[in-house]
Image 1 (tube, one colour):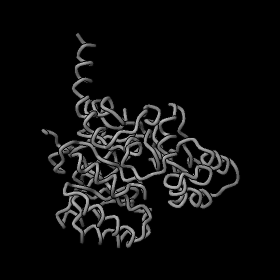
Image 2 (cartoon, helix red, strand yellow):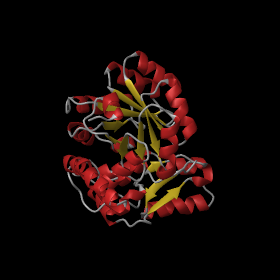
Image 3 (tube, helix red, strand yellow):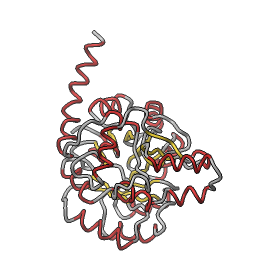
Length: 317
């Protein structure tokens, strides 16, 4: 494929699985890589031993390129995680939630590719100057932790594409062939998806999570954490409403952090305890109505881009 992202990361298709904390499982990541995209496991707040087990499982499940996401300021064992990713020669490192410059240089010296998740043009330019191979520009429609700048994908992508020369990956509000075609039209070279991949057969999450995504309407996500500048988009559940009540009440930022940690995420997403833990979801959930395999989803998206382009051309003749 004559695509800058595919050439840079040795991919068949310009589609990346987002690093969704502790629920980006080796099974899901391997399925995305085997289907031609870039599968990613998240290190979240995993211990080094837990992360190494996930990494070993992923490496034994695919021979295709894959990635690990390191949320720099969130991961309490970041040095050990970096050492493991280096020792295992992970082909692509995804960096987020922190200043990536030193890590970009470290991985570059080891011959490993890096992509950096950004929410503003300023941070995209900094990532390129530091030596990143690509940037993921994530709009405010996305699930989970978001940039407090609250820029939408529609506005962010063309500005980032104009500002940098490395491949730009669009994230936030993308889940089908129309989203992929739109991202390419805005100047991106590919897309990163999280919520859409949760609603696939290979995703190792609770069935209730998948069902809630299928049931979601366009207005069924909520943003919490604005009070402290820690912005997070969740699916509307009893626990989300509990978080909103706490934020509106007398909670401190520490209280909020304790109620939205990875244990809470695990209770909601993996155990299906929706009154005791949160589930992340992007605004694209209102458009998701089926649970395909990863292979089916990605092939439908790639094949469907031509249909979208033909549809656009009919509107202009």
